[in-house]
Length: 101
Image (cartoon, one colour):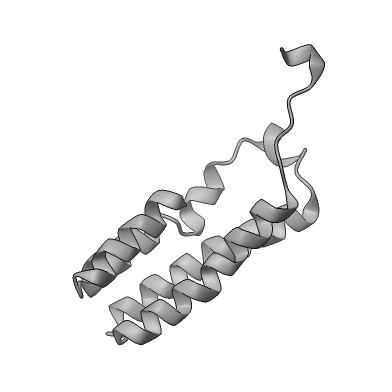
């Protein structure tokens, strides 16, 4: 998702709505379907809900860009979308166990 976010920012800076849409789709829900079921089963429900909402927000951003959304609207959507990223990173951490060292 970070790569998609970077692509959206670069395309927005260049006022390239086609690029915004393409980059946003890279973070969309389509990438979530490839999650390994063994991994997904170990994730907390709230983590999954937040992840799905974030992927869907990328897809919504792509749709808005396809529809010709003005730059300010793209940036506003991006601000809301990244609040999910901040929330997730503040809440969830990977911690190595003594057995994995």
